[in-house]
Image (cartoon, rainbow, N blue to C red):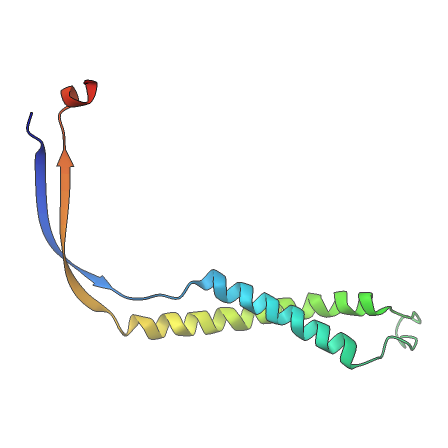
Amino acid sequence: MPDHVEDHIETVRVRRAPKIAVFLLAGAALGVVVAMILTFAFDGSAEKSPNTGLVYSQGQVFGFLLLICIPVGLALAGLVALWFDRRSSAHTREVTVDHESVQSDEDDRAL
């Protein structure tokens, strides 16, 4: 049995867009690295805190810095990704595509 073929020629816009998830992962990783550098660069954990009177370990200081550095890294990476996305929208191009759809009869599937 013959198939029913429909053929449409369309013009579409094509552009390259950045993968935002990759930028966000890179921003979070950058935040972890910055928190690690800040933790070991400044040795302020040996003294008592003037606000609480407690001595914080380097692990606690690293955790506190992670709570600050990861969201900042995510925000900055997200802004960079949005900037690249806006910039890529200016470089769109139109392409002619052939959209073809094939419909076969139900009797052919039973065989």
